[in-house]
Image 1 (cartoon, rainbow over the protein chains, first blue to last red):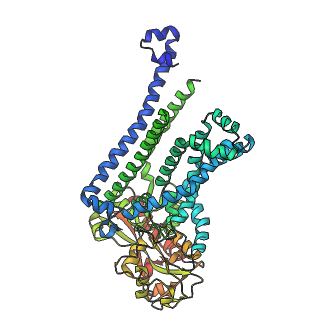
Image 2 (image 1 turned 60 degrees about the horizontal axis):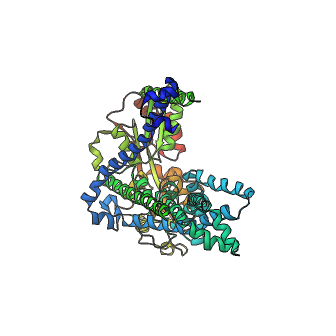
Amino acid sequence: MAEHTGAPEPADELRLVTRATYLRELTLKNLFLLCAFVAVLGVLLIFVFVGVRGWPAFTEIGVREFLFGRVWSPSTEQFGILPLIWGTILVMAGALALGTPLAVATAVFLSEIATPRVRSIVRPAVELLAGIPSVIYGFFGLVMLRPIIAEWSGGLGFGAFTAWIILAIMIVPTIATLSQDALESVPDGIREASYAMGATTWQTIYKVLLPAAKIGIFDAVILGMGRAIGETMAVLMVVGNAPVFPKDVFSPLSTLTTQIVMDMPYAVGLHRTALFGMAIILFVVSMSLVAVVRLLSRLGEER
Amino acid sequence: MMRRPILLVVLLAAVLLSACTNTPGRSDQVVVTGSTTILPIAEVSAEMFHRLRPDVRVLVSGVGSSAGIESVSTGSSDIGTSSRDLKSEEGGLGLVDTPIAYDAIAVIVNQSNPVESLTKAQIKAIFQGKIRDWSQVGGRGGSIQLVNRDEASGTREAFSKIVMDKEPFDPTAAVLPGTGQVRAVVAQSPGAVGYISYGFVNRSVKAIAVEGVRPSEKTVFSGAYPIQRTLHFFTKGPAAGLARSYIDFVLSDSVQKTIVGEAGFLPVSERSR
């Protein structure tokens, strides 16, 4: 197929296929090109739109006041997003700390330890976690998990801790499936060599396989990080949405994404601009995460 | 095999095209957007209205009073419902106000909380974060957990005006996006305090007496209960056509005498405006 479409002269094509087939191929090829172009155009339009709407946040509020202001209070025209940035980092870091060991252990189990029968049950179950809509996670967190944490901590149960647990579960499938792929792409010869040296399964896993697959696993963690930063609905339902620096992990806090959702329905003027400014920051963060992933995989290829 | 995708694309295009031609069918529907407090009244009366006029659909959604006002002033909806008055900057939008009911805001605590009565000044200090322990207002010791509403909420706006004198809330309070959530969280947390529309108070929570007056149909009726407000329908210019008929229906006895009262609100007709 590739040779056909790559051929410079349509006349050459006609000798190989009928004219109708050739036309159909050409139409489909352009249709797919158009589809791919729509995706690129979408990203570009969103970037331009968010950029144009959000840029005044930096010029009118001031970069210092906007990024490092400690008070978010739209009704008094104070638009400091430092507490929200801190909330985003806190929620993301805790979720990664809880989720990464869980997910990497799952990946090791699936790729190195599980029998094919067990794997055929566990792998779809992990993948199913990714298919659950985030609002369900949020509802589960709000109704089931929050009261337990409330009783345990003596607070309302809204806070970073509740969000950590929910997000940790949510990022497991992302990190686990990608890490499993990374582990499985380690050549069997390396495994066999390790076992032949008398290493146990555990020694093989943590001395040989994990180091060999570390770039792939790091990739997976960064993609999980992107998911944790961008996740909105589930986090919104369990963090308590107070735009302050929380005094502990059981106190209400807010993140960039949740604050955008809470405020967007009614925000006008500079407030709305500030929300778009926050969107720019989220955009830049997620783009740099993708850039890091690309850089890493290029590094991996070069080695 | 090659036929399939083309067929699919054609089908998709056909569906999209027909969707486009169907959208201007707004003439037989009324879009009502706004306050979550007014949602029960608007929804039930919308169903009744649809039974009377089967050709008309009234689409009701609850997204908060400010969003409702924004939506009706931009023309996205026909009626914006609000549980607060217009702010001064919203005065120039050309919105016409129709009061449809009166409502009281109840300050609610957990059923296990022994506190029965608070003054307005105490409630204000609690929501400002100046009083942080129940023992300071005659309760059992234990920290007070504030449950606040989001800034789009008309209940918050009214509470801020009547109780807080527009002074800021304690920013560390949990902010929940709906009346039902506030009630559910307060019902489960022994130290929590929140405020909801009196119409939503049920046995799962305890409504506190304010200045010695417990909210009840009687005290709200007589005006003795101090935290009260008006529920509004806003239209862009005087209501016309189907929006007018729907508003008239909501103001008629068949809604005011039944639904409004059942929802725990005070009918507009009961008190001279």
